[in-house]
Length: 570
Image (cartoon, rainbow, N blue to C red; front, side):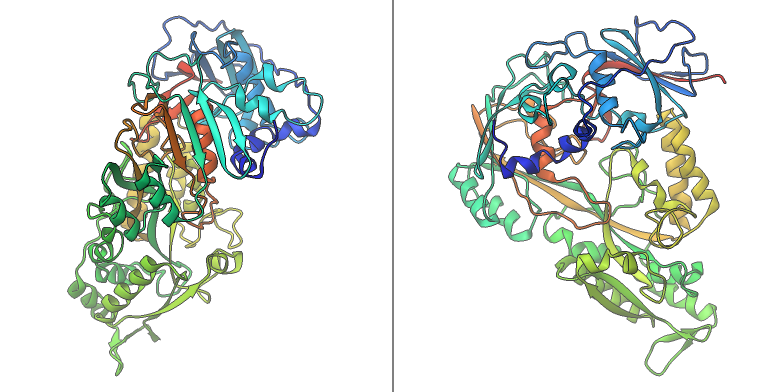
């Protein structure tokens, strides 16, 4: 099978997962760790259990109980050996470096039986449920003469579909996996559907995509929600659409190395003067009238872990009174000077984004009303996110506006709260605003070694309360996610997690063939570098992992029926 340029985009994730194979490691040996006590596989709880009295040869262990019925599309059982193989190819055997977080902490594995495997870790790893997002078939991917057998990798899958055909620069065709093993869709619990084939196509423009949707040539789209696009879809007959809070969330950050902004009363005055509801009305509510404020810097509103931790209100009178009470003096230009400095701040953001331009204009007007001046510095995304600007000191910017991409488990963004780290400014890797609070730092770091998810959530929320009470930044809103589909099709539902909007594709019904438009336009240029959306959509229909994530951003077992975690008594 020839792999086209289009499909090469779709293989970004697999190429990362299989990177170790390209180093000539045709057949990797299993690392074995001897347990201190036998592991029982009976009566495994559906929810993870943690104990200090565990059969764990190292600091921390996870035992996965694979579903007895789970098989690959060629009829071969999904086994413990596949889990071990997946961990092996994710770690460079020479350097020990891992392609993804967490796998480098695994010190050994023990295959208890064909459907049970134990992994030992050098330290307790709180976000362990993020591991084994995709499990690979050892029997297919080992023993290749040269290179990586991508074709076989995509036609031997554990998901509801397999790769059928790639038509150069035109479409990718998936067919129903006849050996798909669940009785019902593992994540939604709905009965399996009757869609036999999925075709991914590549429209040349948003206009072409909408025209084909209206004409019935395309059955589903999930582009970046633009106002004109949502309006046109809303007027179409025979088309259903949905808007929901998406994974990209907008915020305003203060540069805490600025002598004025480092003082909470200054940040408080600015926060009280900015009407966040007005910002929503002028931006995302023009697309989604139901959009609401986001009051957390950790969890998205879609998450069951979300709680409102930001107590900011709009009160311009109190804002100006704070300036007066701190002996600021109003100048002839109606701008206050505080501690000998004119209250003027550079607001940096991206160029050409209508919403961010509106946010700046509204904030500038509101702050001018209390005697504070904002000066806009609009840059290209590549300019704003360059190391010199993004991690710059107060001589570069004092206030910055952009968006982060959230995840179901927030561990990848932990460094935003760290006082020290590898960022060019000397703070945590993502600590752009140079904020340091030792209590917040400690609470967030503690989540790395908290296995109990209730405890981890509490620590994150406690950190978020302290972070936002100190006005380290101002959260605004989640950008909307948008999906529209042919009304004959039932089952589509927005899911902003790594499971993607294809999370329950096994249960889709109503059409034998479903044509999906892949929109390659990046939704947000941000420093985390989000996974290509097209790649994730295709792979979600092909491969399963230990866990999937439902629309409430909760981890649900897929290839496994349960997992147990053990913290060593030593």
